[in-house]
Length: 112
Image 1: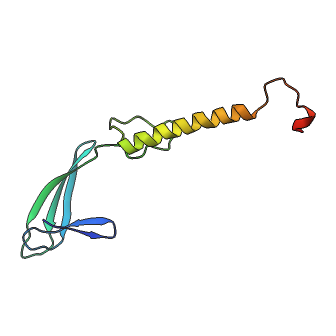
Image 2 (image 1 turned 90 degrees about the horizontal axis):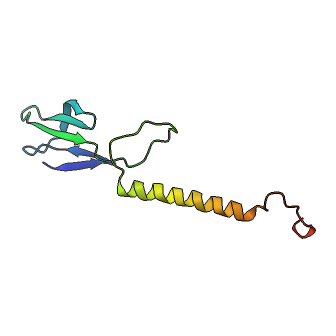
């Protein structure tokens, strides 16, 4: 079975006659697993194939502030990006604290 690409979309082709396969049915087996059935678009061939589509990890977390958690693990790249964002926020807070005068101090003429 060959895979063609159109733009960024992968298209399966029939292993027998090389015509494009068309997804006919699919159903959820559970929250992160889908069962798919593909049929050859060549009416003389009509070979059918089955397979699975599975979500295995979170590549980018939700932007919703109070989003529900998810049972899927983060990808290594997503974990590094999250850790970097936390570190950047921590460094930003430290830089802001160094730039501000201590609480209750009066500015002197040199800083005006």
